[in-house]
Length: 231
Image (cartoon, rainbow, N blue to C red; front, side):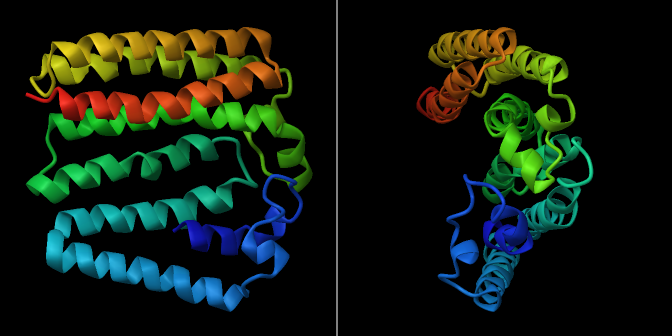
């Protein structure tokens, strides 16, 4: 999916410093090579999931492919709502892991989905704030581009992180994880929320970068806690 996304966005990638050295932009591989590789990856993955895992997981995988490539990617140059739309397929991988193991979607699966869905807003909006000038140059309508004052961006960052806190401790209350997870998830959530509030107040690249760093530390840590303190 990432390969096909870069095929789609090769022209806009060339306009942004942060993506200008991607393989398709600098010509280290051709568009046809990338297209063949990306389509082959998706096809093999779907066949594997359908026949060696289960059809439910394959269907979810297909939703990820369609949602990311046919909705999120083309909408990035049309509406700032693309972040929310892209967060839906972006949150499906843990749901796929759940269905791969159990062949069903239960409350625990939806909690994992909600955790990743909410996490994406502070994570990607921090990136969007840091590179808003580059996104604007490429015509990508991230929220900080269409609303440069940053008030709505700040609200979305804080609200999503506030909502993430109770969702992230929910595994304890439905019997998926123990007390160590509850304490650890609470502390991580407070840390994440603090970074979000600081970034929302300051509206600076420095605070946005700190929020981005916290977000990439938070996610693996909270899932590791869940694994090691499962019930």
